[in-house]
Image (cartoon, rainbow over the protein chains, first blue to last red):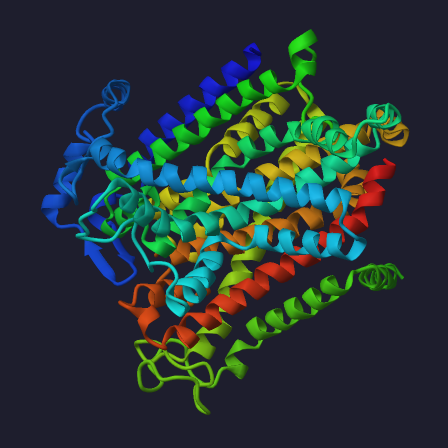
Length: 334
Length: 287
């Protein structure tokens, strides 16, 4: 793998971890005395006891170098700190909620990939001019609208209006499941709207990319050759055109993982879905900084590692890169 | 003369807009008017209780009131100010800052280019919204802090775009000739670079302001907003946190109107930006 890139990644990692260390120490004035957060309907001020606790917690009475050393040692051990408001280790709280966030983000990713590719391909091959421009405008607008507005619209129409889906949560409270299927069904029903919300906001970008790159690919010489060979239409389209058009998709999806994470935070808060996003907003409401930073760190590390994985995947998928170690072509065929 | 020239070019540009683009421009102008004329259009104060709590739309409160009896229409009007100010502030700060950074990186190259582009790469790798949540939680969520936090995470895109353009402009014969004659960066900027890049920078700034408005609304929705200012996201936050709002009719005005106006603003900005982009595209291609 590219050496320059590895250096860049390690640098990114270091910057993020150091920023995370610096934030509570950069706050103007004495952070824990003057901070009085107001958020929603909850009003919190720090008592002297809490302020002393935080000062001791962050080790603000020690020299900076030693604080930094302690911080790194904690990070290496996987210790994300202790939540004051919830009286629990941060890493445990995060681990308990991580599966839910993973469920809706992967669900939304798969949904948007499938829908975006299908619609994009359809638009490039069959769509008439006005259908194409309708789809194009529609998807472009939807991908600009923040996830919580889309989520609220779905919530009001499909859950509150029609009662098709539950309003909030990830499963029915106090429900005793008779069998495995029932449990899966309940969890699935609760996950539909968050996944739909997040998937809808992400489909637009994928649709546009597939449509545009497919149009470019269709003008290439090898497509003409394949046509001249008398290949059947479906084989030509799927094996020759779509496969090549989808290569830049890997990079695009990887680049948008951060946005996906941001969307998940919003969608979870609309549906009160018990993932990392709602944990984050609870940390904000309670002004629980260790918890807030822990969630942020896990989200960022998750996005970064997924990015690296996607890069590796890209090199496996694109035969041009495997063969002659050519310079990475940004954006692929388009 | 110059002004006249510009006016006709704006006129020409609008003529090239698609129908949705024209409609979007109209909606956008209307929203700007609402924001500017808020004190004269509003029938009640957005800061004081103006009637019974949670009353449905009526003659007096034609978008109803919230749980404190605040007039929703007044809050919508003043909320437009918040959204537009934040959008403009961020677009100016991040657009100009990022633009200058990009031009410097492209013009000088070398270590300063490497440093700036490293920073851009790092910024682009961090998930934006979670990072902004953390920063806003630490540094407070007043208007100024909000613009700063948003700009911090927005300058990367215009920096990258303008660096690319600077790099390609640098190779143009007339620029090289000017540099050969000893023109410095400042002269170059004022005389050649900025006029060439203005359309690009403007489009970039429109996109930035759209993103900033969305980000501000998202943060306010999560409860990270200036509680003394009026913001659409904050109204939504209050409405959503009202216990059992979906089981009552209250959402039909308290939640619906801020939702509608936010959607209108974001959509219109996106459509206008798209049309401007296609307008600028042939120019970029011909280069």
